[in-house]
Amino acid sequence: MPDSRLQQLGPDIWLVDGPVIKLYAIPFPTRMTVIRLANGDLFLHSPIEYSEELAAELQTLGKIKHLVSPNWIHYAYIQQWADACNGTIAWASPNVRKRAAQQKIHVVFDRDLADTPAPEWQAEIDQIIARGSKIHQEVVFFHKASRVLILTDLIENMHREKMPLWLRPFARMAGILAPNGKMPLDMWLSFSKGRKQLAAALQQMLDWNPTTVVLAHGDILQENVPQRLREGFRGLTPQH
Image 1 (cartoon, rainbow, N blue to C red):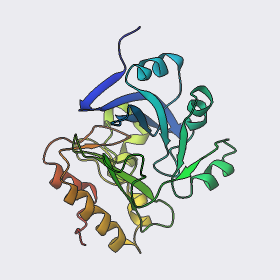
Image 2: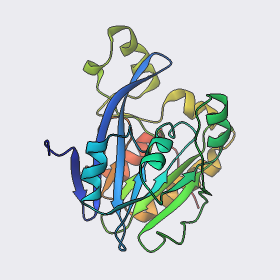
Image 3: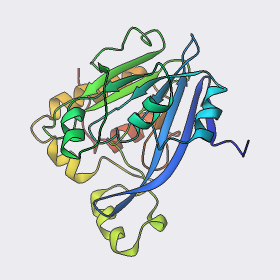
Image 4: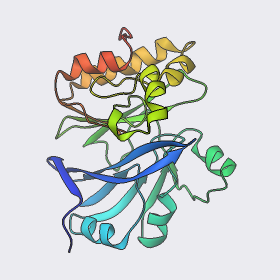
């Protein structure tokens, strides 16, 4: 087997970086988070493009079971995994079915994610839905054993040197450049009438007391995590 693509982040949690994809001509690095549950089932957060080699490597960890779309943008490869792996469950985030239909991408979702964790993982993973935007709702997960918080697009932290020259000034204005990446400006503006809901979600994230924050796009956060979360949410004041 070739060199492993799995990066172990803590007990029973791994990252797998995928190919760079383009959305509206903007290159985005991609990342999947894999959690092994106590019963041996694997929880695949934001599955990247399927390959037999990657599936075989994951199967050395456990049974590929839960295929999780954390938001309306991250779903495109779920059907590839569902078709290739028997007995999977595809989990839908808010509005993802509508988005997939608009994009003419065929995905069959079996279950819906909620503000509380599913029975299949509630002992090991907590979750909430970050609400307050008409455009973007995101399911946020917290893996208890590793104290890893898993975000998708709420914060981006990408490298300037990996972007085309024309994009760099726009990325700086959007606030998504490492090492101080934040919620993209356009997304932040979409929460303008729902800041209280977003602040409540941020408070829950801080209450979980994570030591690491995984991001789908860019460097993960592992130092001064509470401060970086507040900064990532553009100084929003957390509230219950």
